[in-house]
Length: 231
Image (cartoon, rainbow, N blue to C red):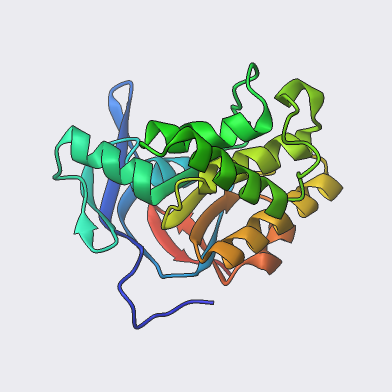
């Protein structure tokens, strides 16, 4: 599901990420290019150390690459000042990690409401939107529970709802089900996939779980520092 005639939600151009390793230089990404279009769910497949996380961190403006460009909704972001990059990251990008990183002292609804409040949404409206997202994720009966009172799969569903709470243009997910058993993993990813479709959000999902590729519109991998179709 994508619209290739539209402006890509996310584009990386000639992205290079190098790491110093002793006296040598390790090229994790080398002039990598990728476009993600509106409504598209793209899988990023590869083993640990292949460059998946480096790509996601650069695309999400969490790290500055060695070279290249990152365009989000038609705007090149790496040349922007820090406060402008922070605003785009907060408003346009949602992050889901392998570990949910929920605030344990807050219940589910507050975990999802807090990013909205940080963006200036009044508490009442933030909690209303949080309740809607949690209901969509099948957690209507768990909204008042703290993370320690929930299963691993439920906690990750809360994390997905939190990532969606500021209505981003794209979700960047790094091994979002990597800490779950196979059955729970499939259920959680189905929830993530369904929510991207319901909310009209694009997603780039890094995983080494090949069973999840059935959900993707297309699948790419990092090979010799470049992003290429997976086959």
